[in-house]
Amino acid sequence: MCAVPTGSGPARGVGWAGPGAWAARRLAAESPAPLRSPAPRPAHVTGGVIWAPVTCPRRCAAGSRCGSGMLPAVPVLCALLLALGPGPGLAAPPEHEVRALPGLPKQAAFRHFSGHLRAGPAARLHYWFVEAQSDPRGSPVVLWLNGGPGCSSMEGFLKEHGPFLVQPDGVSLKYNDYAWNKVANMLYLESPAGVGFSYSDDKKYATNDTEVAHNNYLALKEFFRLFPEYSKNDLFLTGESYGGVYIPTLAEWVMQDPSLNLKGIAVGNGLSSYEINDNSLVYFAYYHGLLGTQLWKDLQTFCCSQGKCNFHDNSNLNCTLKMEEMIQIVEESGLNIYNLYAPCAGGVPGSMRYEGDYLVTHDLGNSFIRMPLKFSWRQNLFRMPVARKKVRMDPPCTNSTAPTMYLNSPEVRKALHIPPEAPEWQVCSFEVNRSYKRLYMQMNEQYLKLLGAMKYRILVYNGDIDMACNFLGDEWFVDSLCQKVQVARRPWLYTVGGENQIGGFVKEFTNIAFLTVKVGLRGGAELGHGAAGRAAGRPALRKAAWRWRGSGARCPGALTPPSSCLFPAGSRPHGAHGPAPRCLHHVQPLH
Image (cartoon, helix red, strand yellow):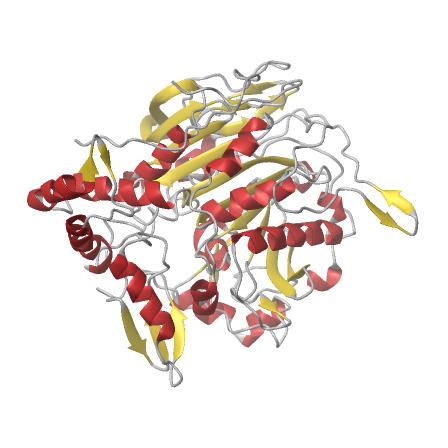
């Protein structure tokens, strides 16, 4: 049995609405617990005067509405519903406004901005901010980060859930009917420095998890300095893939700062634990028909003991040899690790290839990092003499030609206010990835801090055919947090053509939920890993609308949630007292 994590004082939890929406109440005025690493103090002294941020109480505006985006966006975006604070004014930097974006059939009716944010003395992080298409004054601010480490959030903007989708010609854009900015003010940030159009004045791009989290926090503070009219809006932190590390570590900084109105986080197909991700992938592969019966028996014989399998860092030589067979099948045979059932763009890629002036590699280094073969391969790659070749890192089985062509167009760079010192845009940075220091092997501590505060909502969601960060591992990770189950795992539904269909499955805990999105909803080539925006919540967007009346809510008609939409005002989630659990390991079944 697992204990329930704790908090003290009045409840600041929020209700779980439908299959994953949040209904947030205003932040508490108390100071959160400090982090282990040094953090900026919320108060500072200028000219002998002490300045401290003030959080003003707000209330929900009656009649505010929210539509859901693509189905994985339903749980994410339905979190972003409270009407709040003063709306946009004239404070946004006019020199950053994008007034004429090449490739659009018609310029946008909503405002959007592009520029660079200072993140420390040297880092200059590129952002693209798009206001909500309706009611920006009543819509939250949502930060989005793609992963890598070292990959650009412009991938999320132009190919997943941004308002404009780049077309295969690399020149034209079309409007996205299911863009997240239909219900939220979206901030896309290219991080860390060296990724996309982001750069560092000192040209030093070696970094690590802690430094990236701090720099992302500094960039967020700089954003609200430039856009003070949004500083009181609800704030949500979202991301995918290695965003599973970026987002919780950033949240540690943000939750300390009462001037930032953090309401929750959402992580899609995230890397939350290297060990759990590796162990679960072997089960995923076998039960999806990728591993033969004999190999599976050998893996159980050599890698499992006393009811627990260790495919992550097993010292048994026979286990290592069999794991090399497994890795070759799953990651090196030509399967699309982001969507098992989709073809591999460009054909079977191999570990690397030459393309013009570039040596192209595909391994982002997030799986089986303790396996000797994988470790030695990456070390040898980084030591290769490549003086006569530039190195490019492309995620496997993906085609980044169109966004690369579009963003490197001189006209587009000019429209987005990209200075000459910013690098040529690439989907992922080999230099950042190869020098990146991974300091956290699991995110349990960060999640438990957020849950212990009893005032933030967390969503972990997955497309169910991704093998890079598979759904089974993320479900095991959420289970390992040992939160009280509020609603048992069950299907969630959406309506299309007047009929209910299963969209996936959801399990709700106190202040956190795990949700899957069913592959059959759409056959997009990268559906599994890019569950955030590619998977198919399209029918739900046409139907779902939320009406908020004080502390009550009405559930979206397009969805069939088994639980109530909102905890009653003043209710307290279970487990507000007692020590936080130490339940960090999941024992996998052998059969």
